[in-house]
Length: 183
Ligand code: GDP
Image 1: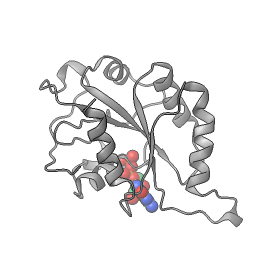
Image 2: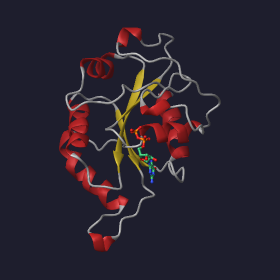
Image 3: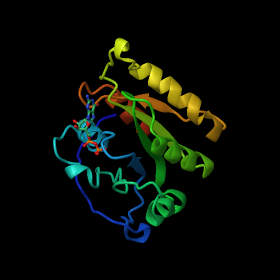
């Protein structure tokens, strides 16, 4: 799978105002600084498609996540996730270089309980912590996160480890997207 072209289409805070051409959509969500813009730019190989991390948009309407998700997911976000028929999967971004935060678990729990199809994208997997400082390696944080969220899911959602610095996971994400949309 490869990206042929990428363009910003629009910004919207209403499901009704989202593009209506029926293209399959993938939404990126995650807390501030988790690496949403960097991931989009790494996938499309552009420095600035996802402008200032506000509303990433990819061509083929690999669409756009609602911006910053607040602790209480706003009405639009929930409506979009539950009612958007062209939504293929929600990519929940989790920073693998640090232990999960409360809000990460809240996102996962809400998506799991509402049975929204999702993929967990672990970001910043290039960052290795010094063990002696009490830090954990990305692989350990990934395992911890999966243990923590297992109660919200009947089966652990698919997950991919990525880095927008090394482009780790880029091809895997594209392959995953093409497999899902062909179902
Ligand atoms: P957003 O707020 O979720 O859009 O996050 P950004 O993409 O703006 O990234 C937040 C910060 O994390 C920036 O300083 C990025 O350079 C850094 N960052 C994002 N992805 C990675 C990654 O894969 N590895 C490392 N080491 N840093 C990253």
